[in-house]
Image (tube, rainbow, N blue to C red; front, top):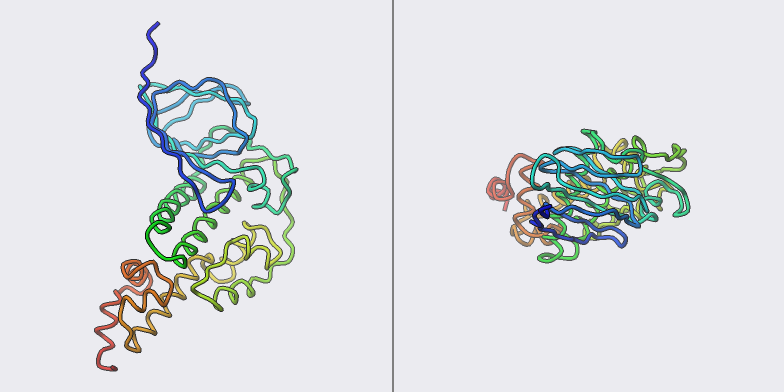
Length: 284
């Protein structure tokens, strides 16, 4: 019998947190039976795959979400074509427990190895995009900018885990207690350059990370990272109005660089920092 082709490309990437990592794989390889010590969730981006799972044989197609539980034995091979491409994020048991306010000893399983959930798919794509942005930022820009990007990543991870726990797991609903999110807003407003982690914000409010994220967005219309960017944009706009240069305003407001500030200005205000500066010149 002819061996299957071993056309295989893989990339492993880190994240801002201990206990979380990701992979991006394009492969014709047939994987034997194995298991991971972590939870995993991913997106099959191209092709199709057939695999064994804790719930029997399953097939997944492009656009499907795939999950694994700790110690769940599975394998994988291409289906209907020579290869397939997928991207995954894996997280330790303690990480998932922290998202729901539980402990690492809690027994929780994802209920299906293949999912079709448009909202969860969007959240996972957003997580991958934000992790890509964090990698670009952490290697090229300031600590302040990297901390803000890490907060964005943590929000997306909490969203993904929360949606999995609520709709696709054996986890019992968690009763919400506490939750004065005004303190969270005050913490960020006090020091716009020092972005907190979602861990810090959740602890301040006495909530799980997912609860803190949802409660803050309900109170203020946007999640913490978006609120922080808006406040930084307002600070930069005030500095430019008072005569600061664009590069200086970007640095003093916590943006990664001037181009980052320009993107946020255009998105939120509908004009660039340069246009704002030119419009304000008669005041100088």
